[in-house]
Image 1 (cartoon, rainbow, N blue to C red):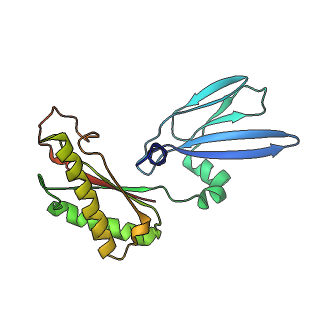
Image 2 (cartoon, rainbow, N blue to C red):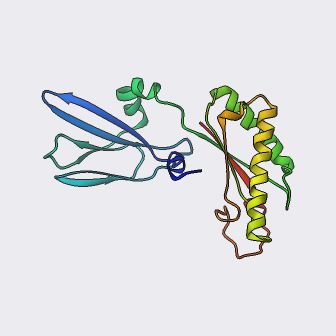
Image 3 (cartoon, helix red, strand yellow):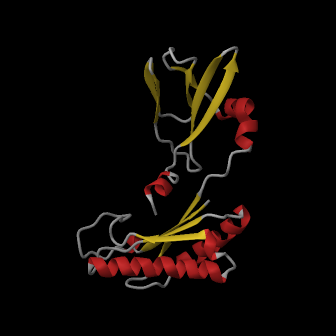
Length: 203
């Protein structure tokens, strides 16, 4: 997965609204939580200054190029829906993330992950997804090169399972990280079940 693709998965959701007032353009940025209720932070800036927002519903407004960004405060979910519901309704749905776990040194899904796999297939069909990322990982047990190969095989196994369930290969992007991006950081040569995984992102 390239860096641009990774950036698309960061859970920072913004509502950017451009409001025309006479000849001047007013820009309002509102920080929205992701589906899990989490937010990041955003710095809104121009030549006159900058303002950081980091709370759900917090807004920043710029009245013009020479006006310093100001905050009108935090908008409630009701206020956001009343003012900008029509705009929000046409935004694409946020990506759905799934994690599938594997048995040690294997491309076989654990029993609980078989159920999660069904949820993956349901999400793809409901969203009519045309962009599915499948990212393989391993723990640090064993040789680094072997772990990269193992994570590749895991990603390919899930891609094959998707294809067998009617998902076109052209819609599936596979990549593998080996032991380089653990969910749980460990020392070398450590068997960690949560690192033996494939992440599936449905857009």
